[in-house]
Length: 260
Image (cartoon, rainbow, N blue to C red):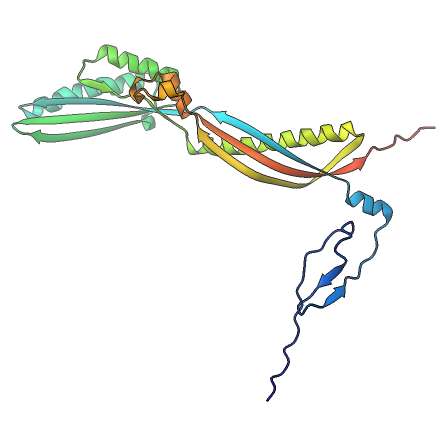
């Protein structure tokens, strides 16, 4: 018993411009070749469809960190629990009041306390985490606290970082600058050959890259705590690069009409 013959299915392929003379036929399944019915374009239309300029553009931008965090730690160990609490709270109140006088908002200051027993004594420790947007103010406040408080108060080295919004803005800026560079290149090419740049037909971001700034080998061999503030800022700086590809249509120079 013979099986019924399966119906033949067609495979569609992408359309190609009239200027591509090499693809004259449309292939279908089964190996058959069917001609593509086409309407020939006029010479002016064919010339216009092929008038394009393809350019690439690249850009690299960078941004320094926009936030820094410093931790101030206060501790005391006493035989009496009340004495340990009193010692820490007195210095803690002084720190928080000083921050308020310097204009720091409450949402930028976080205080945590830890109280525990150590052998035959009581140990209390408090930590004040401060977030700064102004690095000059950060240095002034840290210097002030070091001067006014005793050695039992430990101030950490600043930790610099980027807010999520600033990183996203940097990526966007890199892409926009790369597109602008490509557009300027295309504009200059058209001006050089006596043509007019038309509208963009394709804008494609081909490659993106980002990395943190690195200090040189001599500095990187040092401990992080020994780096200066400026070195820490440089090390935390983020760089972003973008490479784009653009296609523009090209128009001929418009002839100026003579006014009678």
